[in-house]
Length: 358
Image (cartoon, rainbow, N blue to C red; front, side):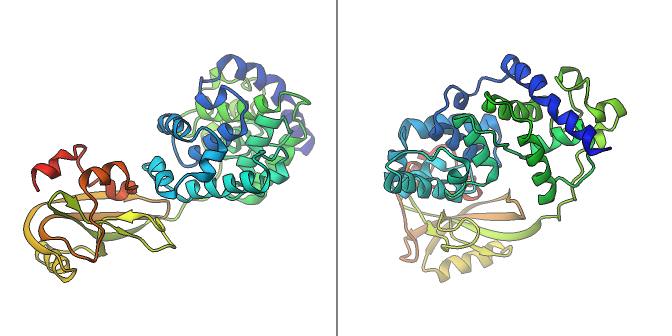
């Protein structure tokens, strides 16, 4: 296909998508205003996370930290507790780093230009584009997997969408056709089309698509072939043995290293490899835990982006608490300690369970 033909297809997008978006957009809490803090927070939360999962976190976060100034001054432990369960905890840490820059270096004023937004920690081209277009009506595209899928099908593009050059090409072509106003609606329309019509799994809902009349993949029946992306390498599997050590209504936790996976987070004591019950007991004893009883054993999996943990967990009741660990009371563990989902999944929903079995 000639570049001229592709250019014509790009030019059709704003006129087709913006009216459709205004009539069909989902009601989402972060779409109720154009406050940069709200848009920024939602975009960071939505990275690697489903929309439905984010809604409650978004409301809870803003109830606790309604202003950027509140985020900048929040204790990190409280911040990570608010983020608990969302994963990718560096997102929260970078939110706070950015908030501090905005409050202490920019007098609390959120930067209004794309290039300045891009300087904030944890903000890449996509998030900066989303904020700049939605909040400040700047004609900057926010190109993610949804948008790349939509464009790949409309212009029948077989370039690998995981390559930076492909994203750069799509971003540049889109920015040439941004409307003089309503930039945010155009950005949102592309995102929404990819989320609810030109969907990431299963066949696209072409009959509902505002671009159906000029989508080349639909015309040629190649929707299922697009987008093209290189297959990911299989995740590395790691066996781990986790210890849930309880003593008089307290449970042992420790801090992870300050670098690497789940850096600086709390965790239950654990070791690499799968250990038998007797081997696990020996490890716990070597930590200075006087074991009273092995209550049970469970197995869980947890998937990260590049690694998958297969975890055997031993629930040991101890006669005394080892000085090698921090032993929060049960209610503190549930209410104040931010545990990554990989470890929190070993707790029951009811903290009274551990008090009753102390």
